[in-house]
Length: 74
Image (cartoon, rainbow, N blue to C red; front, side, top):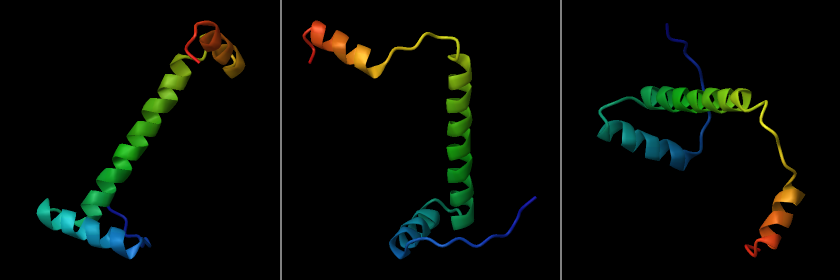
C-alpha cells in the first residue's frame, strides 16, 4: 500500500536525486523510500545491539582515559 506525501528538500539535493533516479532507471520516490527503509533498518539494528548488551558492565569515560594514559597511548 502506498501513501502519497509531500516533502521539501534543498534544490541541489533534488537535482542530485533526480539525476540518480534517471541513471538507476528508478523514480525519486523509490530512491527516497529505499533510503528511509535502510535508515530505519539501521536504527532497528542499533536498538537490538543496545538490548543485547544491557547486562554488560560499563566503564566511565574518565576510567578509559586514565587507562589509555597509563598505557602510554595518550
